Image (cartoon, rainbow, N blue to C red; front, side, top):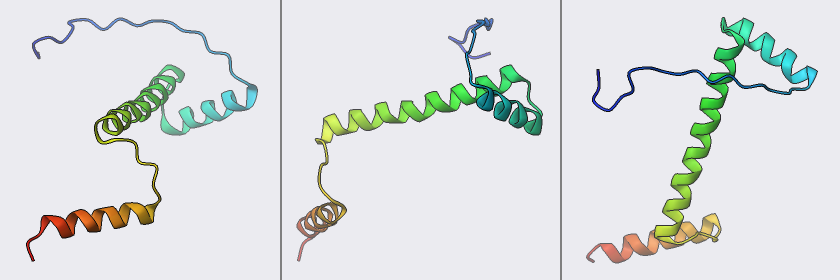
Length: 89
């Protein structure tokens, strides 16, 4: 047991409204992966949350380092300039 971890996990029931095609595709994928519906929805939601958690990290980095609105070429030039300045010649 890890200190600070909850001893029990509680499930919360939710209701989803899906169009028929999305539902059918999800059912087929769940069957293919050997998962129940709840397991599939849980895995999909976790993946979606993780994806957006990365956006929070990127937003924080942009706040610290300033937003980059330059092109790839601008980035390459800036990287080259910094590398050049950081080395003794």
